[in-house]
Image (cartoon, rainbow, N blue to C red):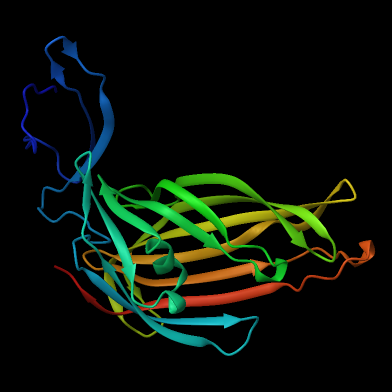
Length: 290
């Protein structure tokens, strides 16, 4: 169907419940019509109880207990609270900046969210901001991956659906015994993994209606030494996050594995770079929704 001279907001009637719809909008001008804008999407529930796996409103907050273990060592613990700031509106959508009260102790996902904004677009949670990769063993400056309209999860996409992928590269001059240019290539992927009737966190808290949506970053490092390309780190999953979102609450648990396995450069007379394995987790301890 097509509707003319519609107000903003516009209420649609006669929809089928538990379905996702796409729509286009164009302006009627004195000299004709603009180009169509879209598609945009929304999900309609006939029960009046739509899904909301990360409720966004100003001053909503989520507190987490975090752990991080380096190369099998004793876990380092921290506490943090992530809060949604005052939203800005653009093209009818509300963009919420996420703020963290302890950036030094933040977990990977909350740290990422706090480097940008979140907004709901139909059935999708969208992130705009940056993901930071730090590889201290290579003495690299932090690699900043700029994400534009990255889909964090979808409330309706089928289990196993890949939602978003982005690839890029960054070159830095590094000291690996000699000064050489090293290029990191990376791919960021998000996936709707599965919908769960319930999920029990490691601390024993039980949540109903849970969505698992993962974010994975794969990467490789190649140096140019004496004019020849040398693989410093073969392509591998370097950051793997497993994230659980409860309907009406938000992110309840997240685990992350950082894994960097470097090639043996000793045959070239270069120092061996130690491998890195970091395991971390975030578990929700309290939340406030407005």
